[in-house]
Image (cartoon, rainbow, N blue to C red; front, top):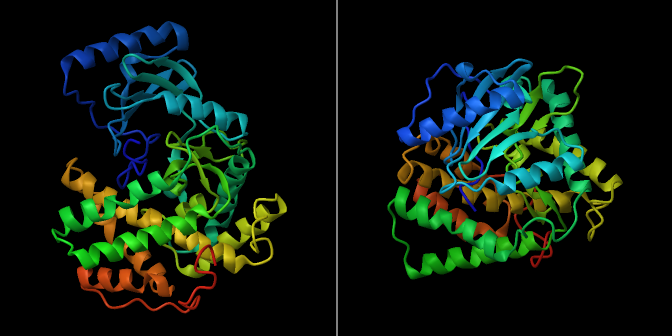
Length: 381
């Protein structure tokens, strides 16, 4: 997997235009790009002189906006030696078939890594959200749930890669490898390493116990678009190229425990309950006691979110230290806060909480939402 799609630094989006000039490290690629773009004039009405930067990406992808005789399109620049666009094209088709509003691929030069896409929106859900009054965002979150449930309902096994133990563990390893060792510059002793390995194994076992669906893998407001057409009630969906077949809990954890936005728990609970109510009517909660016990489902979401937060803290450290993108690490405290909040609820995670508090110099987190002793320690509570 390439760098997961936690792509947009503050103030940018793949569909948001910018006045910044397009810079090219390689003149040969610049020339190839303009030659390819010129060729789109006759086929798609592109006006090459209007191309401008839209955003950079946490990976090696870049996005441009270009006008056409009928509106605008988005251009993806993805060097083929660093980015594989085949999953994007394949999964875009899968999501279209599921009824989601995603960009159509209008042209694709696979050998050179250039792609022309529909411009499905200029503002993200994040751009239009009310940060002061969470209830004002109710309609937006319900539209997000519409998209998520449509995706999950369309799920079939053996279509997308499995979010299996190997992948979950590989993602978790980013936390000690990049956040602890590289960012915090701490060396773990054998006791600490054993604690972390045991904790990671518990996290993976709990998450693998959940039923599986299609997982977007970065389902959050910065990847959901407000359509240009007011008659289009669906939110646009982007950054789906890393989609997998895995725990049904993952995308809800992504949506409500956002990389760049934190809500109080009453807001998180409200939206998650509404998802659960709709999902169980669709048969997506037919697992153990989830159908009638929201608490059991919510605990599973927390454990899934914990895996994601540990992974993302490692990714943000790697983006800063290896890739020279320091804006991401500025959001790492948000993820440490998520980790501490979840670890404070469950007795199995007390050693992890103590280690995090020691490393970060923080006070133990206190949560009143659920007791820390979790029933059924072998699987989702």
